[in-house]
Length: 140
Image 1 (cartoon, helix red, strand yellow):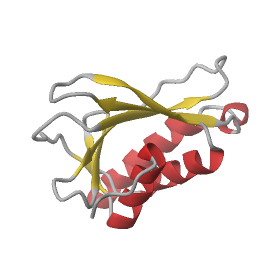
Image 2 (cartoon, one colour; image 1 turned 60 degrees about the vertical axis):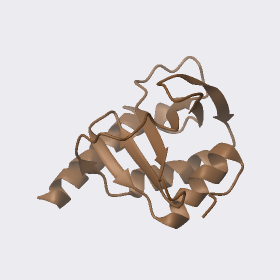
Image 3 (cartoon, rainbow, N blue to C red; image 1 turned 45 degrees about the horizontal axis):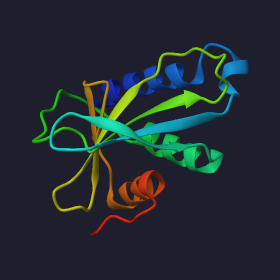
C-alpha cells in the first residue's frame, strides 16, 4: 500500500514538472529559494539557483526520495521554502511549493511538499541540497 502511494505521488510530481508537451519538458528550470527571517512565518527571497547542473541535482533528489502521504506538524516554520520555475517567463505552469527544515541535530533535512507529503533525506542528500541552497555545509 505504501508503495502504491509513493508511486502515485511520484507520477503526479513527474507530470506536474514534465508538463503536457515535449516543448515544456525540454525547457530549463530554476529554483527560487526563500529563507525564514525570524521566528515567525516571515520569509525573504534568498537565492535563485539557475545553474542547470545544480537544478537537476536537486530535482533528482526531490523526485527520487520516498514521499510519505502525511500531514506533519513541525515545531517551527520551515527554515527554507522553494519552488521550481521555468526560466522562460512565457511558460505558465503551476508551481509546487516545498518547505524545508534542517533537523535539530543539523545533520539531515526534512521536506514537506504542498502540505500533504513528507520526506526525510539521508545525510548525503541533505548536505547536497543545503550546499546548493546556501553555499555552506551542514554543521554535522
